[in-house]
Image (cartoon, rainbow, N blue to C red; front, side, top):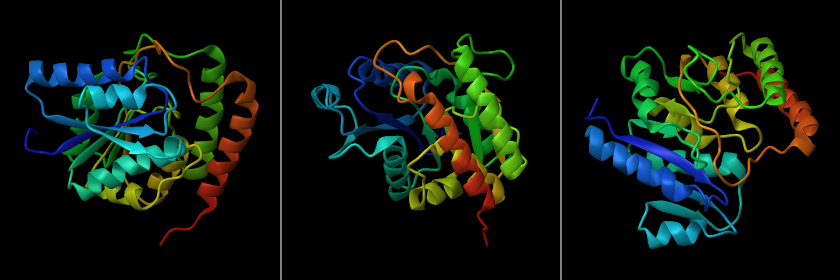
Length: 239
């Protein structure tokens, strides 16, 4: 396991309140546990002090000139992982919600050839103390229903950004990654293409600063469009 090159992809947009804490937690975890998780922060055109913090602390990062959104930022990370020949890539949010101590659990099924792609879930094994708001849980259940209809896979934590990929999936996502609603849409894509996808119970924390990319005022718009995107992906034919 220690011989596998492992990269944490950290998309960040206006995360001045969190990004230094996130990076230091990974560095501290590596030192205490003798792990070798590399990380790269994808600064997605932030307008706050995110870039300044990354540069002043000599943290590995890529600065995007324009804000590409979560899809474009994460795909940049996958392109970096492919170019640098990483064996494993883990999406790891820059908002301090993900628990680095669960990376090992997330990648274990991939290492054991039980999965090509894993998704960290707040709703399995009752591990996570933070479950998100009631209305978001309702939204997640609706998305779960549409994913099941689209590809036959039942996923409980449909919007989780804590996800791990093997080399084949890294290449897949480096070549194509949706800019809109990437988490549920890519789940459908992978299942339909025959990849083994597995959901893993993990711990997550509540955001301590900054703001989510999904806002209450546009939640109805989000739900309608994400469900339409899932249906469209489900109708696509793959060779």
